[in-house]
Length: 262
Length: 323
Ligand SMILES: Nc1ncnc2c1ncn2[C@@H]1O[C@H](COP(=O)(O)OP(=O)(O)O)[C@@H](O)[C@H]1O
Ligand SMILES: [Mg+2]
Image 1 (spheres, rainbow over the protein chains, first blue to last red):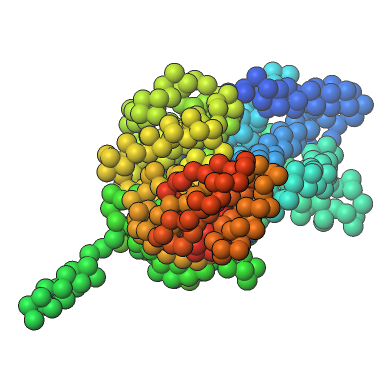
Image 2 (tube, chains in turn yellow, blue; image 1 turned 180 degrees about the horizontal axis):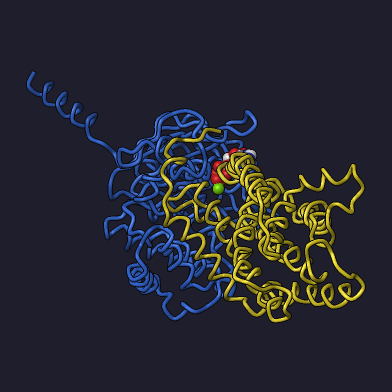
């Protein structure tokens, strides 16, 4: 498999926005169902954890209440789910239903298709972030201008997990295979990335591993913005996320080309 | 002497003339098995060119290579002078592509399938809208524009896929089995629309395993089998070259089948049997002499002209449909 220079250096914006628009239109057609996932489900979790568990837990480091502590974590978890679902499950179906094949009959490239999909994954991450954050603001669990900064880690989580999802859809032989994305990746990350409890409460030998988990830096940055104290560790977290994305990208393109151009 | 130089000059001119599509020694294999095994062909501007062959002949692989959807292992392929291997994107700018399975977007309406494709290829919003209305009109899909794809009949789906390939007003369209799986009525409709497109100057490359389709639509065609092109020419040329002028078709009552077979074998008259229908080809060119069979009860003979199926049979020893 070769990467023609043409493809890497000549990226057309319209190809990317064209793919994005297709996804947006298909999404909006089913908005009544999708809205439950963007908003209703994470809000249920937010309310259950914030009011329920929050009553049992007095305070967590740096936060006034457990609800304040957990809010940025839940927002990042939801951003991750949306991006990951989009480019694993949905992208797999698009592979199987020749949506990409048709797109590739247009004068566009695999790189552009992938960029368009990741852009859409980010869009979904941001949509759910705005939805859940608005509810949290209404409950008084999130406030201050700095909270708008959560959109930054939200977009980064969208890019990172939007890219990662393709590692699975590009090689999946059937949809059952894709359940491992959720059992082996999404669910453990959801619980062990510092969303629900500080990583320092984990056993000493587990803690460094948890810090390397790809969602952890996102939660760390989001919490920095939510609780209003940012330091150099948040910058390192951002660098780590960007680095992971850059490492995954060529592999994703390689696997997708193998699957689509055959 | 002067005639000699005249023909030299003619040949020289032909060598310089650039065909719209030039494929030389195209090769593509899957796990060391050649799907396309060194084929060469040219398609001229305005022509309708067909690849006729059974399933597995390598038609789809060839069609996909034309648009860059399948990589070329070796050989050269140029479309409008552009090297497909180097720059398939530029080729797709002037080429409409209809893949074997339509590739329609089931999550979208008819209108959205067309409009979003138009937007994707770079048309402005207003040009994409305008063009969508034009192709809906041309393919008689206007009253279905709000329908979901899954509500369409097979014929409509195929016409929508062809309509989508016309969004870019391409100079050449590539269609992989445009009427496979359609009922005769829908098929005729697709053929009519393709004929009109051809009239408007669009170059058409299609693959098919229906000899009627090839005979109806193609100016020139090649017979393809097992990754190779066996020969090419106009449908008439091919029939003249490889098919008998006439083929006697004999319907035989089951009770008389053995007597008829024995007779043909005894007189060494070649024939093939499809169900209770015997096709007697005789020697090429000469009409088969079957007058004596008329005496046998339950035998009904009629003659038909040699066709592209006979061509395929002569070239490969197999039926086109067997595939
Ligand atoms: N993606 C693929 N992987 C493996 N084998 C393939 C692939 N595509 C085509 N082939 C093989 O190549 C040969 C030609 O296939 P194809 O071009 O689809 O023929 P046709 O379109 O004439 O039916 C067949 O034997 C087919 O099994
Ligand atoms: Mg085929």
